[in-house]
Picture 1 (cartoon, helix red, strand yellow):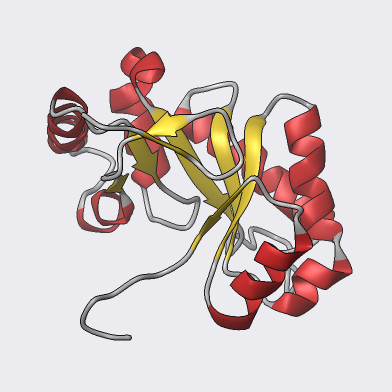
Picture 2: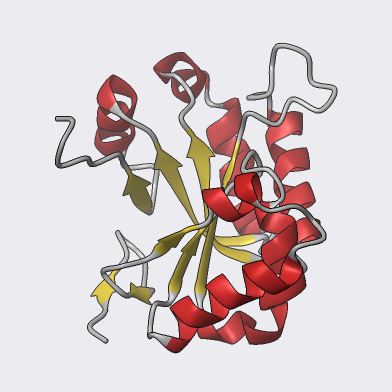
Length: 177
């Protein structure tokens, strides 16, 4: 299958990836067989880009349980944010972003992801810099190879102009533009 360079990385991904929010929202932790069937079908079909997030229900857990044996077969992207877990109103603080990344690695049963992205935080969070610094420190520590931003509108424009990120992800819908 054709592959394209992902953003400013040295990673090559298939133009079609698989977003795994629905396995996290539609399946339970006990339905690992169903999750494995989805992952294996995608990988066996040549798709090599898996996209998830800490806030996608049990998605990361299911990927870790069912995909860790094929870790070299795919590029793994996850997102941090929206995981308050004791952080109160500031899930975008440095400490909460770092805790979210560490939690994702445990759930995914891996020591690193290929791309960790901030998940739809507002421009004010980006400008404050704590969340971006946490991503940069996670990259420095080897927890992620690359860092990115996933969002829309003014925030994605800010992220693109900043030059801080290796990859950007934004929504696209043929029907709703």
